[in-house]
Amino acid sequence: MEARSLNLPNVLMILLLGAGLVPSPLLAQWPAWPEKLVVDFTNAESRSISLRLGSADGITADMNFAVIDSSGRQIAEFYPHEILNDRFWSGPLDRESFTRVAIGSVVTRIELDREGALRLREEFRERIVLLREERRRMRLKLLSEEEMELQEGLNELKVQSFRLEKDLRSLEEKLKRERSLIKRDVDDLQEQIGESRDKRSDLLSDREDLLDTRDKLLRRSDPPQDRISELNAQITEIDRAITHYNVEIDDLRYEIRDLGEPSRALEDEIRKVKDKQRDLDREKRELERELERTAAEMRQLERQ
Image (tube, rainbow, N blue to C red; front, side, top):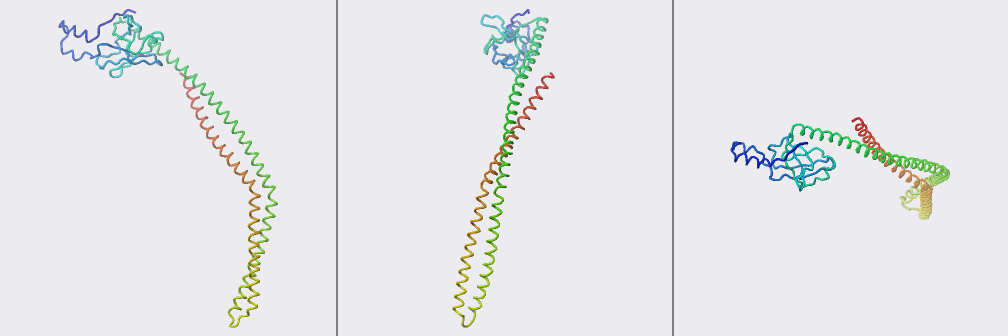
């Protein structure tokens, strides 16, 4: 490719002005670029380089530039592929050239004939296509690996869910057996509680009758003290019996509670297993959504 180095634009303008070949009003239109152009940013992913010119004036896509080494030899030729304010980016350089360019590398403006300029741009367009295809393949590979990891994670959750379901069935069977075993004992104790309540109720009724009789005797002008003392003794005896049945009923209730302790422990275990199942189901749904998003992106990339 034929190319020759040009002096910096501001130097050219000064020379032309000095020769009287360019009217001085055009000086304001000449780009105010720095005296020394250097690469100030590189992007390894796109193999592109960037320059900041200090001014957007005069930057056009048909300009051509070259990175030069310390001996003045050209390392890579490029053109403004993307212009952003006072900065522009090159297209993708070839791999070998990009490895020789670094931040601070000197850049100079070059002039190319029409055929050379077209060839330079065609080379960059071909690299862009190849780079996009390379990125597409890399992304597909990453998505494929991610899909495999997600599927493995989902399979592991399914295994855990199966184990929990098995544990749950086992616990529910144990609970059923436990309740069946204690049902007869609980029924017997409930019957005893009923009998004790009936006896206590009879005693309470007798106590009310005795209290009513005593109150009537006490309202007489000459209460029979012997009879009243006898009634008080009977009431006291009934109170002792009522207290006995109260204690007996409480003890029977405690027995029923103790009989149900194994069942309550099993119920707690069942609740814990169900909580774990809900957590696993939530994790499975999240992984399934991630798998669907990954698969959708892969299908889209495969169609490109």
